[in-house]
Image 1 (cartoon, rainbow, N blue to C red):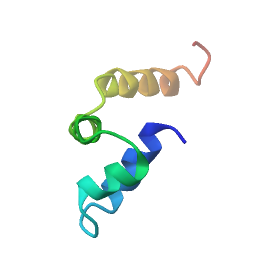
Image 2: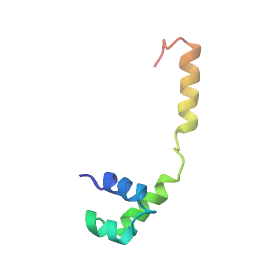
Image 3: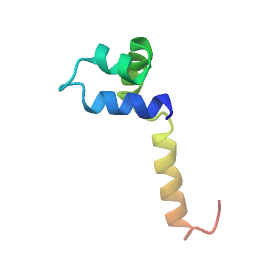
Length: 65
C-alpha cells in the first residue's frame, strides 16, 4: 500500500486514535504524515488556469484542445 493511502487513513482517524500509534502501525514516519497533512491544506496551484480552460472550451464548443 502506498504511503499516501496510509496517510489518508491516518488523517481520517486522527481524532479517534493517537497519530504516533497509527504511524507505527502503518510503518510510516510522523514527519511524513505531518508533511502530507500540511500539503492537504494547500489549494491546487493550477485551479485558476483549469477554470479558464473550462470556460474557453465551453465558448468554443470543445473544438480546441
